[in-house]
Image 1 (tube, rainbow, N blue to C red):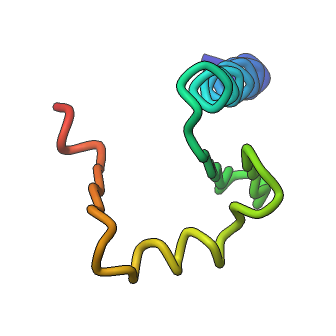
Image 2: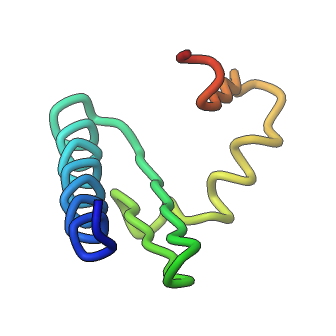
Length: 78
C-alpha cells in the first residue's frame, strides 16, 4: 500500500469514526470525547460532543467514586 493510499484510508476512517461518535452523541444522548494521534504527521485530532465535556470534565468524572469507569484497549477485542 502506498503512503498516499494509506493516508487517504486513514482520513476516511477518522471521518467515519467521528461521524459514528456524533451519531452516538445525538441518537443515544451520550457525552463523547474522541482523540486520534497520527504518529507519522504528529497530528492530534479531537472531537467533543459538547463544549463543557473536554479533557478536564472527563478527568473529574474518572476520579468521581460514584462513576463506573470502563477502559478498553485493542487487546480486549482480539
